[in-house]
Every structure is written in structure tokens, then in C-alpha cells.
Image 1: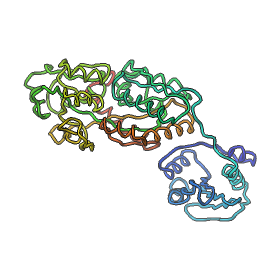
Image 2 (image 1 turned 180 degrees about the vertical axis):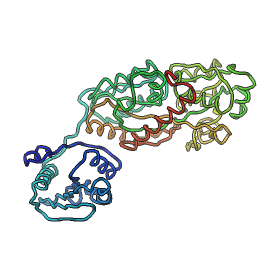
Image 3 (image 1 turned 90 degrees about the horizontal axis):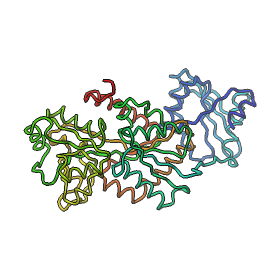
Image 4 (image 1 turned 120 degrees about the vertical axis):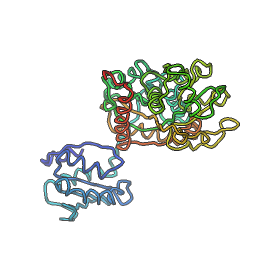
Length: 432
């Protein structure tokens, strides 16, 4: 509507929608990239939610505009049937009146007045058919359990009209799932839960995929890793375990993990680099299988996620030595008769200076619309507010950090750079 009204007045106009947790920064960055002549900030009514934008964020835009070429800034306050227009340049008010005579101001004012009028309401998008929830990992692992838990919560509480269908596509260390979503450009009925194979799979295999090929939606949580051994093993600390690995000789002790050149093997390689111990790494299809192999004595240790091994720990078959976190997990309710998650020391405090957290987040296909992303961020906000989700977070000892928008994308970019460094050090990058 804005474009149509502006063009009718002879004003060249291009509209785009950007979702951000930092409005002022994003407005200024977008204006600079687009070489805008005019920045427009608008609100409807004194009580409208968007009125909040006309406070500190507007001040930031006015203060920052000189640094991007001092474009003209137009503040439109639409309330009680009229639009007040304020023009500013370089942070100084140039003109403030109810009706502007310039063709540009009139066009912008008319367009926003139409858009902000009470009779015009944005249509909320929602799925029109079942949504495929792609899991780029095997059954029983942390990603699988989280995706199916979310699906169950949505169904139980009736959070959407259509159904969510979890589908495991673990082939090629998750490449099957990522490529499926990448190739579904513009399809809002397909979402994917991601773990660190978002980075590790393309780096290790050379598969033509990068996280930027997808649309970031929301971080649900971060997953911990714990150094586990069989309960019958004599080790009481990571130091005792590492000393035993060294004493046994290179390759004599077996570390089980999910996939090859993925998170578990990256942590194993980091342990080797830090301590000089040498393992034989044995890959399995999922974290559930890894825990089962450790219980059966087929491997000597694992670095499984808490949720993948909690049942075996509670059952008295496994014991944790340390968690690869910078601080202890906060959950103090007893899991066994003697220990809670909070009782597990960090690896760093025991002398093993390694920390690693794994993403549990949602992405969509490329080319989806902002309203599609908004639907799923709203949906998962509702999921994360339920008691079932909070219980999952405690049972699985998750780090409950949750991000969306620019914060989420920036975090993912930093983690990608970190994984490049980790995998280079381990020699895991394809063609290295």
C-alpha cells in the first residue's frame, strides 16, 4: 500500500520488511545500504505498541543519521484522524506541522495514514497444511527428542490448527535434511531443527550447503556435553580417566560418539590435543545408540548430551565425570539418589580446560516471508512457555539461552567461525 500510494504521487519508493531486536541499528544500517533519501518512523495513537518506537529508538536514529550521510528523517504520528509530520536532519528539527506541502512528505504521510488507520489490519499468516519438521539426525538423539517434544506440546495445547510431522533425514551427517530444506525455497510448511552439524557437515564433507542458505527463525536452547563412563569404571574424576587412557596406550581406549567429524569427535579431538591422550573414536548413528553401547561396555566413554544419557544415569548404569560448560548446570533436583545435574563439576574446574555448547535452533527454507517467520517465532514462544517444555529443559539439563532475529543470526555467524577454527585444528575440514 505504501509503494502504491507513493508511486501514485510520483515518488520512487521500495518497501522491505526487516525483523530485528535492535530497531535503530537496523534502520540506520538498512538506510545506509539502500542509500535512502528519507527515513520514516511512524506510530498509530498514543497507546499503540509501535508508539514505543518514538522514544529512545527514534532518538538513536536521529543521532545516528549524520553518520550515514544525514538523510532527512520524517516522524509521522497518526492519531485521532490526522497525521502530524516532523522533519529532521542531522538530529535537528526542521519543520513540524499537521500538513506538509512537499510532494514527498504528502505521499509518505498519505501512505502511512492509510496503513495505520484503524480500518486496515495486517493479515496474520498461519499454515494451511501439515508442517514437516525435519530432523537432520537419527532417532533417539537430542535433536530428535527435542523436536518430538515440541511437536507433542503443540498438539496437546492446540497451538496451531495444522499438524507438525517430525521426519528424520540423517543421511550424510544431516546433509540430507539440510539440502531438503534448502531446495524448498519459499515453502513455509517446512522447518528444521539444527544442531552443530549446521556447521560441521558442510565443513567436513564439502556438501554444497551453508547456514546462510536457510532462514534463521529462533534458538530454542543450547545443549551441554558431559564426559560419561560406565558406572563400573573405577574413575572418579576426569584426571583419573585421562591418566588411564594414557597408560593404556594410543588407541586402546574407545570413545563412542554420534557421527564422524561432528560435535562428539570434535570434543574428543580437543581432549586429545589438551592432554596428549589418544582414543579410538567409534561413530554411531545417534546419541541413543551411543549411550546403549557405553552401558554394554562396547566403548569406554562418551561425551553424550545430558538428555541422551539421563535414563541410563538414573538407572544406575552410567556416571558423569564433568560437563563441558563454563559454569555448572543450575538444576539442583536429584536425578539419582545422590546427585543432581548441579553436582557435576565443569571440566575446566577439574583441570580439563575445554568448553563446548551445541545449538538447538529452528531454521526455515530460503525465500520465506517475514510473516512466515513471525508465525513460527510466536509458535515456539508459546511452546517454551509451557510446563512441559520447562520440564524438558530441566530433565535434559539444557542451557536455556533463547535468541531470535539479528541476535540469533549474529550468534550463528560467530559459532560458524569458531567451528572453522576447531575443525582446522583437528584436521577435519574437507580437502585440508
